[in-house]
Image 1 (spheres, rainbow, N blue to C red):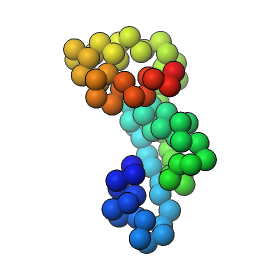
Image 2: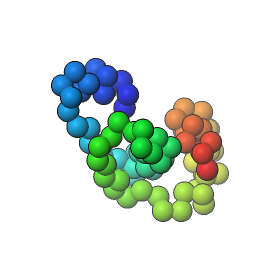
Image 3: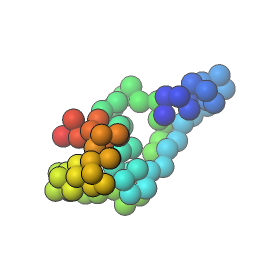
Length: 80
């Protein structure tokens, strides 16, 4: 999100809005929760985010041989 902001939005002093669906909604909501008031996002919509994330952590960590966990998932679960 920071790259997109710096590249396309920063110079125009525009607002930033984000939409996340399914796993993207989970990642977006976690990112917003971590950034809190320091977030560059002015508004967000999370569609079909997992409600009980803690119940799916092991499945997420092991899916596709741990591909998600090694990539973007590990960063998100460090905050649980």
